[in-house]
Length: 77
Image 1 (tube, rainbow, N blue to C red):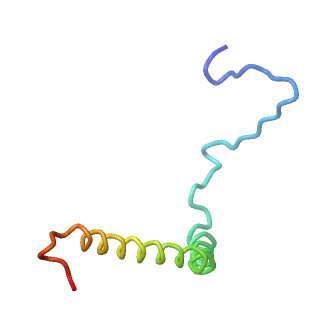
Image 2 (image 1 turned 180 degrees about the horizontal axis):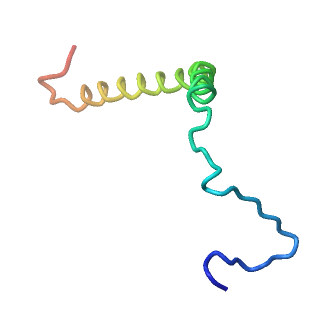
């Protein structure tokens, strides 16, 4: 068995394209980028609220932790 001459496996069919026939960025600007923007607009309302809520909770917890760990003379009344 040499490199490039793979062992024959019964029942397995493999398809491939020649590197000369492939175009890695075919349709990227025409189809890919608009599709990316459409998906972003659809998913931002699902993903953003939990991230914003988590950020606000972490900021509040940090401020509260710093306030609770001050010395007695520096505490707020």
